[in-house]
Image (spheres, rainbow, N blue to C red):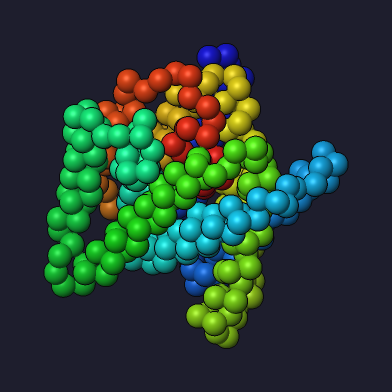
Length: 303
């Protein structure tokens, strides 16, 4: 890869991997649904400016796709991720989120014939989900039980991402990525706004500057900028290489959590994380190099 491509690759890993740190920062002042609302709000600002500068109008006829993704790829998983971080560390959240290729492979095997499971993928899936069990192994009693709920919520979010990615692959023919992005975020905010008002009543307007920095990072960097960088890299180095950014998520997330938030990193985090990453490597090994963007398992608008 060229130096320019390497720079984009690293920045993309940092943008996504740091999202869990910034969610933790946002939760220090407001609830998870408020964090999600502002995250989507800032993402829509970036996408709106993008469409205006390029003098483009979004494709409206695919509204059913946007509706589905707005619920199951934006509102619900974003809320689950933010809620989970009330109980688990940002580093652990980043490790669990890196399971998305495993969840996508499992769901795709059911609905897409060419993605059916083979011995290699089964081994990878077992190794990855075994890593989750290792992460949960010391959290089955006492005060740690809330962490189990956080882990379950995070895994549920991962399966929302995986299922939505498969659904999009099957139904987004002819829809450009930026159209899909702004459509799903519009429907996402339509769902998350009333939910926020109902669940987190009375609504608390954030006042700390660092909270708005967190929201802006999540929306503008983790969702909008990451999408632009993703598709730029996709053209430069191909889908197989660009999908390797998934492996940077746990590294960035765990390091930020340990250094800036003083989160503990014990052997279970290391061993479980390595098992999950090993499972991802095994599942992705031997993939065809001629995949189309829709076949890439990580999604550029997930942050």
